Image (cartoon, rainbow, N blue to C red; front, side):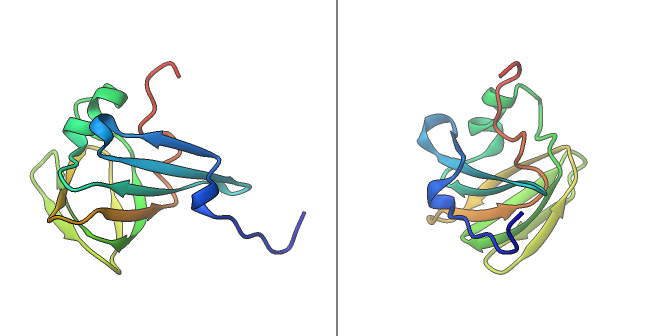
Length: 123
């Protein structure tokens, strides 16, 4: 095993596009699990652009991440909500919707929830 590893999301192991070309998930597989960089384009909303892929009523992924740029609002099924932006670390439990705020893409890194994110059931 190598003591130092460097990978680029620009050469990800897998890229998963969202519906209506509203962004993508770039995934790198590491010996400690998947790490993802998502680019959520302006107008992106989980319930419109990932729900058709996931086939669930709300996002059922847990997230532990960091916002690189842009802004997003996250609303839990029970109504609790949070806005995140550049420099924010966040954790989100399953059972939520989210959408981009403003007119710039929201770019986020996630160490927990993107391994199975935006995957069609049975794929």
